[in-house]
Length: 160
Image (cartoon, rainbow, N blue to C red):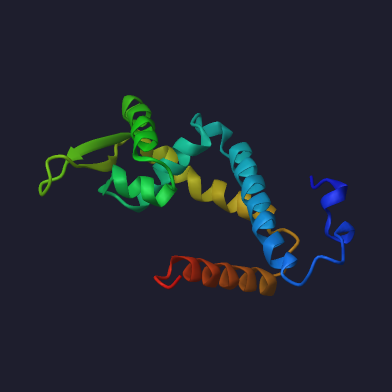
């Protein structure tokens, strides 16, 4: 819930035209936080933390990726991802296989017990997304996706 003092209708009109652009970053952060909380509620039956479920999801999407690649993709440190992988490996959910080209690197793969958990994730993601976008019509959803994809492209381009 946004404190009343921070709601857009209460913002000081004297601030200037760029304040809305700044506020969108905070709004996106709030939406992300709330979406993660909704995912956590929907994923409670997986018996994994949301972070571990997310890691499993990415390993499924990128079989054979390295710990470093996962850390970069998840925006975590390699040490944090290593600890998470330790937990998943202890549970029998992932395997670390040596990289044939670099013996210092391990490639991460799902193990058989992860299959049923990963199979449930698309439904969990769909319920989470449906809740977040329930008040948007199809056109608004399409526009939002396209806009966010363009913003991501802008932020990931080589230009500064």
